[in-house]
Image (cartoon, rainbow, N blue to C red):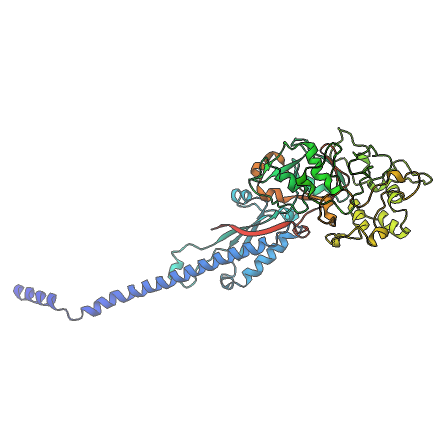
Length: 493
């Protein structure tokens, strides 16, 4: 019996009939499992790609709406959520928030504090936006049990870089405070004095132009080839006389009382109106001391009626329209400096035009009206010689006859030695970066471009000092064509 059993077992071991069925019974479920895993893996990769694409697109769409206005965050949220609403994953896991958005002024804020986000009340500061998708998993999937939920994150920035601007920075330890309190019409006394304190202005060298005259030429130019860049350097060693020359050619000052302005600066044209409140009928005349006597200039803010070395740069309040008359005109009683200026320069005009000058909100607006322009048309070239504009709106520079006619200024350029037309109202405008001059080396282009002030030169420079009127702070919506907007992803995960 034992021998028979042994032979039976050996025979059964050699019999291969039915093995395929056993093998298939074991292998097919395994193969189906692997196929299922492969399909689910592809689905998982598709979901991951989809989530990443939505995060990227939402971040970019939101950043594109960050225009430094008070409603920017609300607009950015709406733009991002509009994209997420159309995504395929939004139709699954309906209880999962599709997107979470955070906003910040600096990338560090987003990196260091997972819960940080600018409130709606500080939307104007928003530069960066983080878009994070909800955590999604595959439903009816073999991987549902084993795979972790997927979420994707992207960070985008919206920066505006200032180009074709004056290569000057106005030093401010707190640029945000300056921008928040700046008001059109307010006058500032800024100084190119080599310092980095509030109220100092410092020229900027481009990376390849350190120590060259390119900076002075850009300062004097009517079309400066200058953009803020990370490698900008402060130029603190420009002589004040050369700085004054680069500014004052806008007032038809091509001789500074000692010598002719350098030829590389003299090629640039003046502004179309060069009234400056100084006796300068001859091209070689030095400025007179006529700050409080005829000829009369556009009125100053009360704080700067007489400028003293100790005058604080920001004492001006924009009260120029109510400042008292300087000294009166023979036979005419005036109480306000604006009336004195109008009667000095526009006695030949009708009362309607004179009243329009009195009603102007800023000195720059007066200047534009004298050119027959408005803020909307300020870039239109004007011709001041040989046309009807002279008698209709242009100032006369003083009485045409009478005992004070000898101090009358020419209202149009007479000293410019070049050939370019003096037709651009913005020749009397400077675009200044407002920034902390102590960290220029690390501030970068975006920081320098963050606060750019458009200022109007109310009078020529003297000893490096400038009296300027604030026209506006540039914004992406009102930038005079100076800001180059860049929206880009900076982080993805």
